[in-house]
Image (cartoon, rainbow, N blue to C red; front, side, top):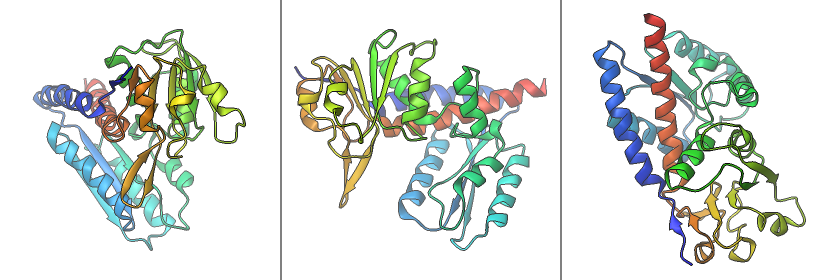
Amino acid sequence: MTAQVLDGEALAELMRRDLAAEVARLREQGIRPGLGTILVGDDPASARYVALKHEDCAKVGIESFQEHLGADTSADELVAVVERFNANPAIDAFLVQVPLPAPLDEFATLLAVDPDKDVDGLHPVNLGRLVMGVEGPLPCTPAGIVELLGHYGVPVAGRHVVVIGRGLTIGRPLALLLALKRPGCNAAVTVVHTGVADLADYVRQGDIVIAAAGHAGIVTAEMVKPGAAVVGAGTSWAGRRLLSDVDEGVAEVAGWMTPRIGGVGPMTRAMLLHNAVRAARRRLAASR
Protein backbone atom coordinates (compact mmCIF):
# COMPACT_ATOMS: atom_id res chain seq x y z
CA MET A 1 0.00 0.00 0.00
CA THR A 2 1.17 3.50 -0.82
CA ALA A 3 -0.60 6.27 1.07
CA GLN A 4 -2.55 9.00 -0.68
CA VAL A 5 -0.80 12.29 -0.03
CA LEU A 6 -2.67 14.78 2.13
CA ASP A 7 -1.31 17.75 0.17
CA GLY A 8 -1.78 20.80 2.36
CA GLU A 9 -0.08 23.17 -0.06
CA ALA A 10 -2.50 22.29 -2.87
CA LEU A 11 -5.54 22.71 -0.60
CA ALA A 12 -4.18 25.96 0.85
CA GLU A 13 -3.88 27.32 -2.68
CA LEU A 14 -7.54 26.47 -3.36
CA MET A 15 -8.51 28.17 -0.11
CA ARG A 16 -6.53 31.28 -1.02
CA ARG A 17 -8.37 31.50 -4.34
CA ASP A 18 -11.73 31.28 -2.59
CA LEU A 19 -10.63 33.81 0.02
CA ALA A 20 -9.41 36.22 -2.66
CA ALA A 21 -12.86 36.12 -4.26
CA GLU A 22 -14.50 36.74 -0.89
CA VAL A 23 -12.12 39.60 -0.10
CA ALA A 24 -13.04 41.17 -3.46
CA ARG A 25 -16.74 40.94 -2.56
CA LEU A 26 -16.12 42.52 0.83
CA ARG A 27 -14.14 45.35 -0.72
CA GLU A 28 -17.04 46.04 -3.08
CA GLN A 29 -19.11 46.59 0.06
CA GLY A 30 -16.58 48.97 1.58
CA ILE A 31 -14.76 46.49 3.85
CA ARG A 32 -11.09 45.64 3.31
CA PRO A 33 -10.04 42.84 5.65
CA GLY A 34 -6.97 43.65 7.72
CA LEU A 35 -4.54 41.27 9.44
CA GLY A 36 -1.91 42.48 11.88
CA THR A 37 1.23 40.99 13.39
CA ILE A 38 3.34 42.10 16.33
CA LEU A 39 6.88 40.75 16.33
CA VAL A 40 9.19 41.30 19.30
CA GLY A 41 12.91 40.72 18.89
CA ASP A 42 14.88 39.26 16.00
CA ASP A 43 14.36 35.51 16.12
CA PRO A 44 14.99 34.42 12.49
CA ALA A 45 12.30 31.69 12.45
CA SER A 46 9.69 34.05 13.86
CA ALA A 47 10.64 36.79 11.43
CA ARG A 48 10.38 34.41 8.49
CA TYR A 49 7.02 33.07 9.63
CA VAL A 50 5.63 36.60 10.01
CA ALA A 51 6.93 37.51 6.54
CA LEU A 52 5.14 34.49 5.05
CA LYS A 53 1.89 35.57 6.66
CA HIS A 54 2.12 38.97 5.04
CA GLU A 55 3.00 37.42 1.69
CA ASP A 56 -0.17 35.34 2.01
CA CYS A 57 -2.17 38.48 2.78
CA ALA A 58 -0.90 40.13 -0.40
CA LYS A 59 -1.97 37.11 -2.46
CA VAL A 60 -5.60 37.40 -1.41
CA GLY A 61 -5.94 41.18 -1.02
CA ILE A 62 -5.90 41.38 2.78
CA GLU A 63 -4.33 44.56 4.13
CA SER A 64 -1.26 43.98 6.30
CA PHE A 65 -0.37 45.79 9.51
CA GLN A 66 3.05 45.11 11.02
CA GLU A 67 4.77 46.21 14.21
CA HIS A 68 8.35 45.08 14.87
CA LEU A 69 9.56 45.85 18.39
CA GLY A 70 13.02 45.49 19.87
CA ALA A 71 13.97 42.60 22.12
CA ASP A 72 14.27 45.05 25.03
CA THR A 73 10.59 46.04 24.78
CA SER A 74 8.90 46.19 28.18
CA ALA A 75 5.64 44.45 29.04
CA ASP A 76 3.85 47.80 29.29
CA GLU A 77 5.16 48.88 25.88
CA LEU A 78 4.02 45.61 24.30
CA VAL A 79 0.56 45.82 25.83
CA ALA A 80 0.28 49.40 24.59
CA VAL A 81 0.82 48.17 21.02
CA VAL A 82 -1.69 45.35 21.54
CA GLU A 83 -4.26 47.87 22.76
CA ARG A 84 -3.58 50.06 19.74
CA PHE A 85 -4.26 47.10 17.45
CA ASN A 86 -7.41 46.31 19.45
CA ALA A 87 -8.66 49.85 18.88
CA ASN A 88 -7.77 50.09 15.18
CA PRO A 89 -10.98 49.45 13.19
CA ALA A 90 -8.98 48.61 10.06
CA ILE A 91 -7.39 45.60 11.80
CA ASP A 92 -9.93 42.80 11.90
CA ALA A 93 -7.61 40.22 13.46
CA PHE A 94 -4.02 40.04 14.65
CA LEU A 95 -1.47 38.02 16.56
CA VAL A 96 1.54 38.51 18.77
CA GLN A 97 4.22 36.18 17.39
CA VAL A 98 5.65 33.75 19.90
CA PRO A 99 8.02 32.90 21.46
CA LEU A 100 8.50 36.26 23.14
CA PRO A 101 11.92 37.28 24.48
CA ALA A 102 12.38 36.86 28.24
CA PRO A 103 11.08 38.16 30.55
CA LEU A 104 7.89 38.97 28.58
CA ASP A 105 4.91 36.84 29.59
CA GLU A 106 3.14 35.22 26.64
CA PHE A 107 -0.04 34.43 28.57
CA ALA A 108 -0.38 37.94 30.01
CA THR A 109 0.14 39.37 26.52
CA LEU A 110 -2.49 37.06 25.03
CA LEU A 111 -4.98 38.18 27.69
CA ALA A 112 -4.59 41.75 26.44
CA VAL A 113 -5.77 40.79 22.93
CA ASP A 114 -9.44 41.42 22.09
CA PRO A 115 -10.85 37.86 21.79
CA ASP A 116 -12.79 38.82 18.66
CA LYS A 117 -9.53 39.91 17.02
CA ASP A 118 -7.59 36.83 18.12
CA VAL A 119 -6.61 35.38 14.74
CA ASP A 120 -4.87 32.36 16.31
CA GLY A 121 -8.01 31.33 18.21
CA LEU A 122 -5.97 30.71 21.38
CA HIS A 123 -7.34 33.40 23.72
CA PRO A 124 -8.92 31.76 26.81
CA VAL A 125 -12.31 33.16 25.75
CA ASN A 126 -12.03 31.47 22.35
CA LEU A 127 -10.80 28.20 23.83
CA GLY A 128 -13.81 28.39 26.15
CA ARG A 129 -16.07 28.88 23.15
CA LEU A 130 -14.50 25.78 21.61
CA VAL A 131 -15.15 23.75 24.78
CA MET A 132 -18.80 24.86 24.74
CA GLY A 133 -19.23 24.32 21.00
CA VAL A 134 -19.98 28.02 20.51
CA GLU A 135 -18.92 29.77 17.30
CA GLY A 136 -15.70 31.73 17.52
CA PRO A 137 -12.20 31.90 16.01
CA LEU A 138 -10.82 28.36 15.91
CA PRO A 139 -7.15 27.54 16.57
CA CYS A 140 -5.57 27.55 13.13
CA THR A 141 -3.61 24.29 13.07
CA PRO A 142 -6.44 22.13 14.46
CA ALA A 143 -8.95 23.75 12.10
CA GLY A 144 -6.56 23.27 9.20
CA ILE A 145 -6.16 19.57 9.99
CA VAL A 146 -9.93 19.09 10.01
CA GLU A 147 -10.17 20.85 6.63
CA LEU A 148 -7.35 18.70 5.25
CA LEU A 149 -8.99 15.43 6.32
CA GLY A 150 -12.35 16.49 4.93
CA HIS A 151 -11.00 17.65 1.58
CA TYR A 152 -9.28 14.32 0.89
CA GLY A 153 -12.27 12.26 1.94
CA VAL A 154 -10.87 10.78 5.15
CA PRO A 155 -13.84 9.44 7.18
CA VAL A 156 -13.85 11.10 10.60
CA ALA A 157 -17.37 10.88 12.08
CA GLY A 158 -17.62 7.90 14.41
CA ARG A 159 -13.98 6.89 13.83
CA HIS A 160 -11.23 6.56 16.43
CA VAL A 161 -8.71 9.39 16.33
CA VAL A 162 -5.49 9.12 18.33
CA VAL A 163 -3.82 12.46 19.01
CA ILE A 164 -0.21 12.28 20.17
CA GLY A 165 0.58 15.47 22.07
CA ARG A 166 -1.35 17.66 24.47
CA GLY A 167 0.06 21.08 23.69
CA LEU A 168 -2.03 24.24 23.76
CA THR A 169 -1.64 25.08 20.07
CA ILE A 170 -2.46 21.68 18.56
CA GLY A 171 -3.13 18.62 20.73
CA ARG A 172 -5.61 19.90 23.31
CA PRO A 173 -7.77 22.08 21.04
CA LEU A 174 -7.65 19.51 18.23
CA ALA A 175 -9.03 16.80 20.52
CA LEU A 176 -11.86 19.11 21.57
CA LEU A 177 -12.64 20.10 17.99
CA LEU A 178 -12.68 16.56 16.61
CA ALA A 179 -15.01 15.36 19.36
CA LEU A 180 -17.64 18.05 18.64
CA LYS A 181 -20.81 17.08 16.81
CA ARG A 182 -20.14 19.24 13.78
CA PRO A 183 -19.30 18.62 10.09
CA GLY A 184 -15.94 16.95 9.62
CA CYS A 185 -15.68 15.95 13.28
CA ASN A 186 -17.86 13.85 15.66
CA ALA A 187 -15.06 11.36 16.32
CA ALA A 188 -14.01 9.26 19.30
CA VAL A 189 -10.74 10.85 20.43
CA THR A 190 -7.90 9.49 22.53
CA VAL A 191 -5.10 11.84 23.62
CA VAL A 192 -1.71 10.34 24.47
CA HIS A 193 1.78 11.74 24.88
CA THR A 194 5.44 10.78 25.02
CA GLY A 195 5.14 9.85 28.69
CA VAL A 196 2.78 6.95 27.91
CA ALA A 197 4.68 3.67 28.26
CA ASP A 198 2.56 1.68 25.80
CA LEU A 199 2.25 4.42 23.20
CA ALA A 200 2.40 2.04 20.24
CA ASP A 201 -0.58 0.05 21.56
CA TYR A 202 -2.72 3.19 21.57
CA VAL A 203 -1.56 4.33 18.14
CA ARG A 204 -2.40 0.97 16.53
CA GLN A 205 -6.03 1.49 17.52
CA GLY A 206 -6.34 4.72 15.55
CA ASP A 207 -8.29 4.97 12.32
CA ILE A 208 -6.69 8.42 12.21
CA VAL A 209 -3.39 9.23 13.93
CA ILE A 210 -2.31 12.83 14.42
CA ALA A 211 1.21 13.25 15.76
CA ALA A 212 1.79 16.62 17.41
CA ALA A 213 4.57 15.84 19.88
CA GLY A 214 7.50 17.64 18.24
CA HIS A 215 9.48 14.38 18.39
CA ALA A 216 10.98 13.33 15.07
CA GLY A 217 9.82 9.96 13.78
CA ILE A 218 7.81 9.06 16.87
CA VAL A 219 5.24 7.29 14.67
CA THR A 220 6.70 4.35 12.74
CA ALA A 221 5.17 1.93 10.26
CA GLU A 222 4.94 -0.83 12.86
CA MET A 223 2.68 1.36 15.01
CA VAL A 224 0.07 2.14 12.36
CA LYS A 225 -3.09 0.23 11.48
CA PRO A 226 -3.06 -0.60 7.74
CA GLY A 227 -5.14 1.95 5.85
CA ALA A 228 -5.17 4.53 8.64
CA ALA A 229 -4.83 8.25 7.96
CA VAL A 230 -1.66 9.67 9.51
CA VAL A 231 -1.02 13.38 9.98
CA GLY A 232 2.37 14.76 10.99
CA ALA A 233 1.50 17.97 12.83
CA GLY A 234 4.61 18.16 14.99
CA THR A 235 8.02 19.09 13.65
CA SER A 236 11.61 19.41 14.83
CA TRP A 237 14.94 20.29 13.27
CA ALA A 238 18.11 18.33 12.55
CA GLY A 239 20.49 21.07 11.51
CA ARG A 240 18.66 22.82 8.67
CA ARG A 241 16.45 19.83 7.82
CA LEU A 242 12.83 19.94 8.98
CA LEU A 243 11.71 16.61 10.40
CA SER A 244 8.18 15.27 10.87
CA ASP A 245 6.82 13.36 13.85
CA VAL A 246 5.89 10.67 11.31
CA ASP A 247 8.57 8.42 9.85
CA GLU A 248 8.50 8.34 6.06
CA GLY A 249 8.16 4.53 6.09
CA VAL A 250 4.59 4.96 7.36
CA ALA A 251 3.57 5.76 3.76
CA GLU A 252 3.83 2.04 2.94
CA VAL A 253 1.17 1.17 5.53
CA ALA A 254 -1.14 4.17 5.78
CA GLY A 255 -4.09 4.92 3.54
CA TRP A 256 -3.48 8.66 3.74
CA MET A 257 -0.45 10.59 4.98
CA THR A 258 0.85 14.16 5.07
CA PRO A 259 4.20 14.86 3.36
CA ARG A 260 7.22 15.91 5.41
CA ILE A 261 6.90 19.42 3.96
CA GLY A 262 3.68 20.91 2.61
CA GLY A 263 1.17 19.14 4.81
CA VAL A 264 -0.11 20.87 7.94
CA GLY A 265 2.02 24.05 7.77
CA PRO A 266 0.36 25.62 4.73
CA MET A 267 -3.06 24.85 6.20
CA THR A 268 -2.22 26.71 9.39
CA ARG A 269 -1.39 29.82 7.38
CA ALA A 270 -4.53 29.43 5.24
CA MET A 271 -6.68 29.26 8.36
CA LEU A 272 -5.11 32.48 9.62
CA LEU A 273 -6.40 34.18 6.47
CA HIS A 274 -9.76 32.47 6.91
CA ASN A 275 -10.07 33.77 10.49
CA ALA A 276 -9.17 37.30 9.38
CA VAL A 277 -11.76 37.28 6.59
CA ARG A 278 -14.36 35.86 8.97
CA ALA A 279 -13.65 38.75 11.36
CA ALA A 280 -14.09 41.19 8.47
CA ARG A 281 -17.47 39.64 7.69
CA ARG A 282 -18.48 40.33 11.29
CA ARG A 283 -17.39 43.95 10.87
CA LEU A 284 -19.58 44.24 7.77
CA ALA A 285 -22.57 42.72 9.56
CA ALA A 286 -22.11 45.09 12.51
CA SER A 287 -22.05 48.11 10.18
CA ARG A 288 -25.48 47.37 8.74
